[in-house]
Image (cartoon, rainbow, N blue to C red; front, side, top):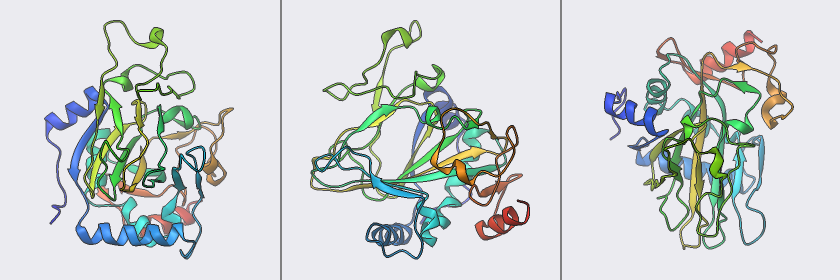
Length: 286
């Protein structure tokens, strides 16, 4: 049984702020896990009622497959409900230090057995230049056990404090360590890699500037995971040279707080918001 309205300890909050990630623990019930897995199967086989924003292989080829689905919440009710998970959202708000939380977008990634490709070391926010400031937090939930063998993510401690790496992509060495410019690392710092194994139904939170990556999946087990990228209520739309696929859904003026039916509010002034209520409100205020 998952306990609702959980509160992080001060130690957990400070650990996240110091390290840039928090491997928290269980946030889904067994029933929720089953429903999300079944929903994912419908999306991947083209049987969902609606299409997601995008779906495709970002792994590089037939022997390095990473199936990515962007805004899977638009195609299946279970993933829409997941955006407003009553365990996850209050924890995100505490880590952000805010009382209003919205969704930037979600991202489903599946690394199939034996041919699942690696995920290059990177930061998230450099790909999201159209929103500022860089205060977003991702909630990465495993739908099957994510282990080192099947491609669990690793994080680099304190890397969210080092600023933006050029382009956001750090690269991978042959041994899966980050391939980075040593001149970028602040004096006195080291690149400390922490593997984050995540059991099914559990979550790891990470800051949008934390270095993270994941090795290939050559095991016999799949590695499906759903990441929801949450933004604090003060996040602004700031057009940039680099665009993003969901930018076409933005209907606020440059410099304004990013709101709208494609960026649902899941917490307002410290209170959870019904997602149906949130979407109706966003439509009437467009």
